Length: 187
Image (cartoon, rainbow, N blue to C red; front, side, top):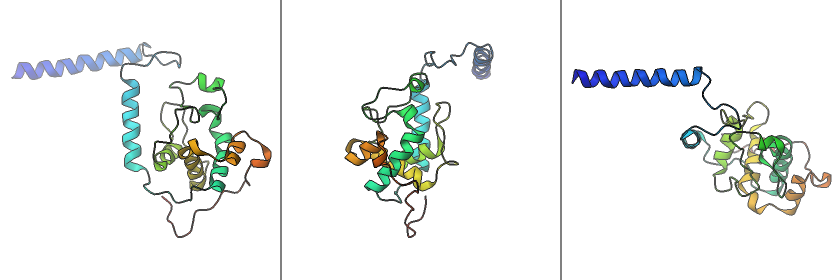
């Protein structure tokens, strides 16, 4: 039994040293053009979904209505579109250069199948090592919800919201965010 345990410990030590040499020796693929490590994407997404599911709000404190979606469209075009794209527009050079590639949220890889609370969690916290920033310090909770509701309903946006995403001035909402209802607690 001692030989078995010694073998297990020795294997773990050799493995740890090998991983250390792999990374410290500059052999790890760190360029955005490099192929991912085996299971890199699966492990990273497993962690993101588990953490978001654990911490995301279960209720939405604002209405999924056109004024909030218009405000969300304005915020999306300003903060998100450069990476995540716009309806019927080609992928940007920035998006093509990122690894992992950001999902094109209006091009078939959206988050309309995710609960709005999960999208809100990702907008608020960002996702490490992906280029996805957290907006907790730059957007209000209401603004983050407005973007999240826009994306949750991206397959059924109104013509006015579509016009706002095309950055047509007449469709742009006022710069003030729609406040959350006072009777509903913030998440």
